[in-house]
Length: 445
Image (tube, rainbow, N blue to C red; front, side):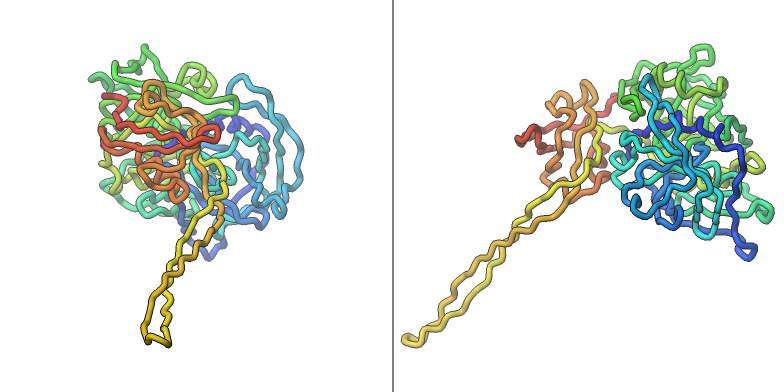
């Protein structure tokens, strides 16, 4: 499943508030801590206890301090401790929004505990990953974990393992590549090469495990970072001040030392977006989850290095959404399901000594809450666009399957099938049902 990233880059600048150091610790008798994770839309979701409340956080290698933005489910029990009101500005030209800076919080990740964790609580409903991922997400965490441990990220087996840096011993690995990391504002950058139009171009990339895309590049003709003729304009994600757009294409290759990833997908964000996120002048782009998940990683902030070892996903082909639709989870609605039961009643006549069979039909109406999925964006000139699908349409069924019986990834995966596949959509629009048909077509054909 592939869904564009929510952009909360501006919040990473909150690190200037957090001058005091707090640390995560494992008991001395624990050599390492294994934590299983969910991988949804190429991003990692881990369980964390915050002040005794079980929550789910996205693990992002670049975020400085934990951000809680969707804690409604825990609002009655989750205490935001020692808080002060602050104002933060979102991406773009939007207004400042209210937030809380909270200190001395208790965070527990497996058996790793921090009793003095600073966090930021944001109440703006636009900062919410749940509609994009189709599952509740309560916040984001990153640097504070990576600075205190050597972190193994096993994408293949869906777990991370936290190691005490003073006790960790590197194993010899002939099939691994070890790269140096460079840090700017607590965010890790690595050096790689891209092949574009038969030219090998060195690039410095932000390592962003919280981003679902494969690769972002910033256009720069002086460096040779230019678009080919085959590209399409697309919705890239959402910021506090609106949606973010750019261009998508594929390039010939991405090289991480000996590892060559052929024909990766690349997004070129528009110049407004680049100016907003390019705080590090030498930065050429971002390497995100759709690339990182092809490896198992050892992330070592203490020694400023990262180890790559390819896994079983390494050679998976890169595919585009061929419908032009961006779909989001949009809460729940009441659904009535009708169940018909037919029972046979046997009746014997005493006079004629005959047996007759009568059918008794019973109709049951069951009401339940089911997920709702809405069209968030329709790419211009895409198959869905020409079919007449519109932003705001609520999907009722896809290829004759009730949408409320599906998960978000199951709906979206329909759009990544091979070109020519027929898609049938039944939607609700302003209280009326409308049916559409179209065939998938690759946007870079």
